[in-house]
Image (tube, helix red, strand yellow):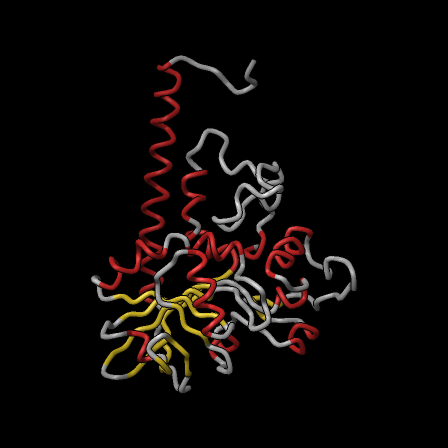
Length: 272
C-alpha cells in the first residue's frame, strides 16, 4: 500500500494548477537572472593562455573558431588522473548534441582540462564523444579561473565558488578529510581525495569583440547543476532525485557489481 497522498483527478488538477503558477514565477525569475548575467561587466583577458587541441597549439582567441562567444566547461581531469571525473562525464554526455546548435548560434563550446591532450583524446574516444576538448596543461588558465589549485594553495585554504574554504585536512589511508562521496569519486579517477580536490567543476564564458577577448561570466559548484541534464528529468519523476550519495557511473560502467546500489548522491564534486 503506497504511503503517498492519494486523491481524485479533481484534487490533482487543483494542486497542479497551483504548482503551475509557482513554476511560471520561477521561469520568470530565471529569465531575469539570465539578463543580470548578461549585464555583468566584461573583464579584458590580458594573459596569452595556450592550449593543445587536435588542430595543434591554440590561444584563447583561437578557441572561438570564428564565433564571437565562447563557453568553457572546466572538466575535472588532472594531469595524473587515470580517468575523467564521473560527475563531469555525466554532464558531458549531453555536449555532443549541443555543440552543433551552439556553433550555429555564434557560440563555441569547449571542455578544458589540465590532463595531457593524448589522455583527453583517449578518454573521449572511450566515451564516444566528439565535442572539442583542449588541454591547458602548463597554462595558468585553470588556476586563474578558479578551476584548479596547487597543493600549496590547498594546504593554505583555497578560494572556490567565491568563498574561502577551510584548509584541507590530510588523513593518510582514509578519505583525505573529504566526504565519503568525494573519496569514492576520487577512487574512480585513480587518485586520492587531496588530488581530486585540486581540480574543480565550473563554466566560464568569454566574448571576442574587435580582436579583444573578455571574460563575461563564471559559475561553480551547485551553479553547474543546471548542466546536469539528468537532474531536470529526475526532478519531474515521481520520486525526484531520491539520493543520498553517489549513485551514477560513467555511462559505460553500468552493469558493474556496484550497479543498482541505492546510495544516492551527496553532491559529489559540485557541493556548496
